[in-house]
Length: 438
Image (cartoon, rainbow, N blue to C red; front, side, top):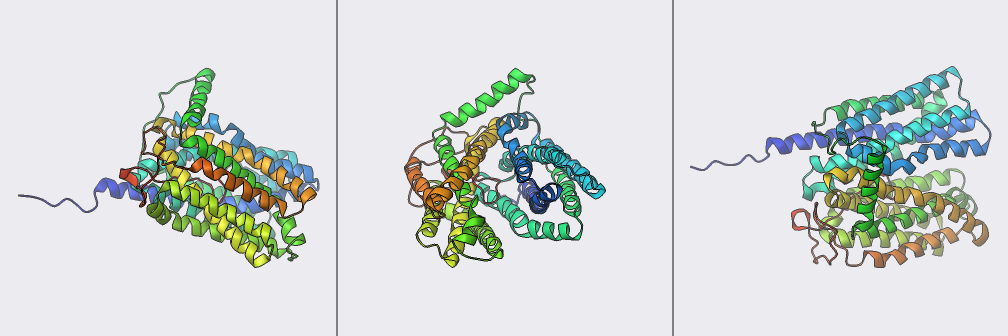
């Protein structure tokens, strides 16, 4: 006598519920992040009229990414759920303290550097652990779908909901955006605490030498893997091109497109719409084309977006090209995160994630400086042309690369016309980032 298997095993339902908790936590904290991204520069400018110190506060919030490989090693040596909860609580406490300081009217600009940096460190911990935990909550052939859902939640929070809410709260009462941000991190911590318990993937090593050895092992894995190594080069170029353009975008919109002040906001909204569209369509693109072709499409689309603006600086076209470019970047992110999750050993995923993303974040200041210099000496169209040409030059690096299944070394090859998926082999991967190359 035969018995029918249940349509949805309890383990699958439990993992799906846990994934929803992770996505909701990301969405909530992203709303707070968006509010903070809008309010923090306003707070720095309100505290001091010195542009230098305003830029120092902005830099402090991203300086933590310089420590990303070391933080990734620490993430690999602790339960991922615990790392995420601790990071959320640290950000919650930091933002509540900042709320109290602003409410009390004591906000010297030098004091703002500390919460900006601490929040950045906690962000690296959370993001590295969150990407490392997704493979435990989603089947191998569903990684693109899961990563796209996480990225969509982040885009909605940081690109659409958070910034206008933060600006409105700042106008109502300056401390309010930071109270909201702290509350969202507290809610995120509660949600993440409900994820399934997991053992620490590492071996519990201790000491500075062991930490450095572990960090070096992660960087060496990235440098030796035949799939991840070229992806790191391309993502660095993506970071250079993106920042070369966005560093001068506000000037470009005013002086080249001759739009009023709100035109800059319109361009950012167009980019956010493209990012969301890219996140929603990325899983279908990967299923249809396979990861290798999807990566090439993402780079080509981004490059054509930049070159289109350089060739015809007409504001409706610029808005469309920014949306197209952002969609390409998010497709890249969805693919590359999933690739890392498949190729990296489970006990190295935190290090591989953070080391890879360091390549993107480390290249961004170079791109911003290059964009400013080009705009000044060669005209405002030059950064767009540079970004497009650099990306097209990267296409040969992606030729014939077909990421293998999790646990395999990077395998070079050409995917079949239909594009392999999940259990068959080569599909894509993704970044935590909302429109930034990750």
